[in-house]
Image (cartoon, rainbow, N blue to C red):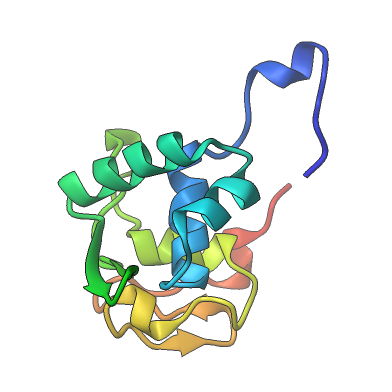
Length: 133
């Protein structure tokens, strides 16, 4: 990731919470240290974000030996009222290159060639719906 300086450095398209969730969806056994390195955050910041995501029901973890194994709640709606409708699975499908989201990370949600299958009742947007002008 290229570091941006100047007036454009004050905002980004994704929150740190979204970045952490994407990394966990790609590898449900990922270590906090590795998430921090990939997201350019401190380990402590990643731990706080994981706690936030778990407290709100977007993420759960189980201990496997000395490691954590995470599970994303793919059917959860996005948090902001302006984002009503799409789910976490829909967001991850857009942000995750095809074939990198693992079904185990998404509570058994199947993986398609574009990332994540939509939850029942949430049809996948067509190419016309996702094009950018």
